[in-house]
Amino acid sequence: MVVTALHVVLAVADPRSGVTPLAALVPLHRNLPRWVWRAVHASAFGTFVLGFAHGLAAGTDTQSVIVRGMYIGTAVVLAGVSVFRILGPWLGTRASAGAGASAGE
Image (cartoon, rainbow, N blue to C red; front, side):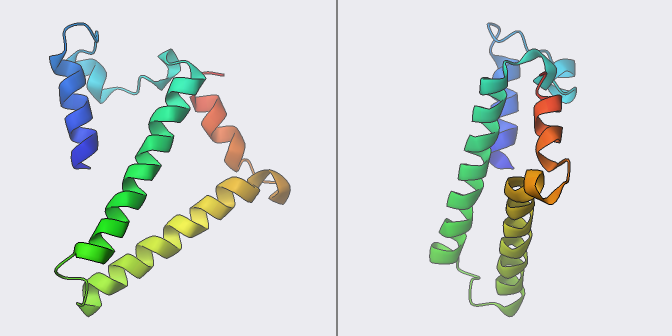
């Protein structure tokens, strides 16, 4: 979340970006080319995976039962939605149609 917040703050602070404070609060994905939208979201997924791995490897609370439960729960949810997203077209769901439609296709 910190990376996302920093991204938004820097976009608003850069006068060349054209992102106003109001625009930062309103979804802009309809104005982005699809490849840009997908690249941003793919990098967010990668950032999450790296942060998750960092927490497992270097987190001081990793041995805590509560924190370990949060890691396991997060991994299960992420794996579940990833499988749903990948297999959606074969399962007869609209999982893959949603992202394209919101990306301004």
